[in-house]
Image (tube, rainbow, N blue to C red; front, side, top):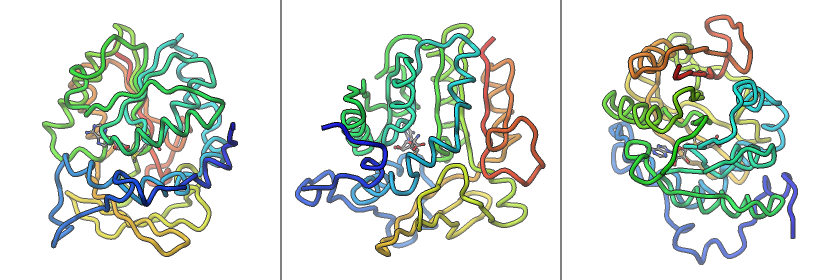
Length: 283
Ligand code: SAM
């Protein structure tokens, strides 16, 4: 049976508590603020949080607020093949397949990929081509060259060391065709670090009655708490990337032109947007 985006947003959790993959719980140990480790994401996108992720991001609202921004960026460059490197539960992969792009969906969390695969199937019967791969060793597990790589939903912020960030960007660069494009987004951490947190939740985390708020912020850690209507709470530990630092890294890895948009707009005030989107061209 084909499901609508609403059905997918509600989630189909029948039998999940029988399943060891869904039973695994988030673990941050005795001192969660000490967890500043790139490898830890595989312990964060597990169990109940994976099932709740689609409530958090609300596919339908996200579809409406993004509009055709990413599709337009890709079409303007004649893109045909896309690697969705942080596929998560498959929102962008499904969108790209619907729009006719040849898409491969990679992620380092097998639980997220399992959910992406079932979401794809439920949404017009798309068979996602999923690959379990960490960005730092992407070329080992994903093959071929792509016109575009996307890494969206504030994913890159899971890398905690500069070495890991450079390695991931180098892997992306190597997998792109000579004129390929990389699109990475990130939360506006400059504003959070400099002015404190405020979010209209308009663009990404648009789920009704779901809150996403910082639990702790310092120069090396942005720990966010996600609270759901059933009072369940989950956390993500992320690195608060500054916008200009991120742009510099992409330039240093070899990208020639980097355009940064704020909440899908070309112009923005320095502390206005919730999210920045970097569009980096290889040539
Ligand atoms: N792009 C999806 C979205 O927008 O809904 C998912 C975003 S979620 C915040 C971040 C995703 O990045 C997770 O699915 C996580 O498993 C993945 N991820 C984090 N670090 C990774 C790494 N080093 N290699 C591969 N995937 C990673």
